[in-house]
Amino acid sequence: MYDLKSCYLAKSVDDAIRALDENPAAVVISGGTDVLIKVREGRLAGCDLVSIHEVEALKRVQREEDQSIVIGSAATFSQVVNDFVIQKHLSMLGEAADQVGGTQIRNMGTIGGNICNGVTSADCGAPLLAMNAVLETKSREGGRQIPIAEWYTGPGITVRKHGEILTKIRIAEEDYRGYTGHYIKYGKREAMEIATLGCAVWLKLSEDKKRLEDIRLAFAVAAPTPIRCRKIEEQLKGRELSPKLYEMIGKGALEEVSPRSSWRASKEFRLHLVEELAKRAFGQAVLNGGGVDLA
Image (cartoon, rainbow, N blue to C red; front, side, top):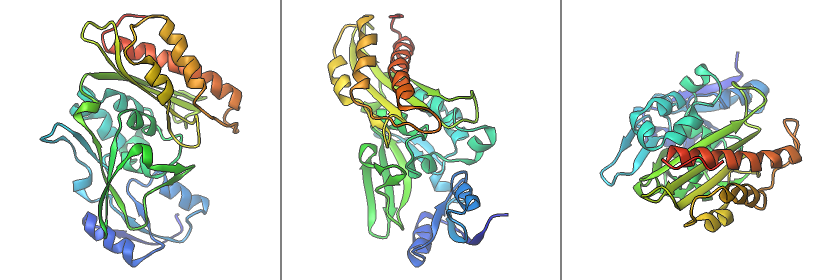
């Protein structure tokens, strides 16, 4: 049994916002795979919940007229994994979503919850950061469009305010057209594991597949929040593909991350993973884009 005071099932986004405004202590819940754990552990014991689980408008994945891909915040991980638009244009995001928990968790947990919990280990954080995702929220004051790079403010902390609902995750056409990528999650087990480290590489090759037109490198659990390695990205852009780039991306990433030691892994081991996973994810992303094996 869960120690809950109440749970209100919102009929719409506006209804959820109203319920939150009326109860400053209420907590938003969608799939519940994060919130209910906190309730069970006592951190949210006796709380009031406002559920957006039944708001169908938040579950859609679609490509809009401007070719932006929009993912509703209440879309489940399984929906993200199996959606045709995601598979065709944002396959790296599907790879990451497919590594969240087990089947039951993926069937219930939502991509919006994965972003709103603010933790650095969230599997979808690094891929969305590499894709320059924009997070759309709505509150009584109106709507906001927040670049995901500005979303995280500290461990488990985001800019989302009470009474504000994350409604959509938007990726512009310019941030996915022609790009391919790869996401690697390292954990002590192959399944049902929180990431010890995650690495996302999102890149665009030249038409002849010999040059790196653009690259984004993002990590989970390599800093207090998901992090982009923008310095090494700039150094690699425009370069001819060669084995030398492997060493550059690995060494360059080490200069920008700041992992810490925890019971899951030491700082030193995480630094080793940063270098190694950057190289591996980069190599596979190049292959996924039609380039040659540089190893």
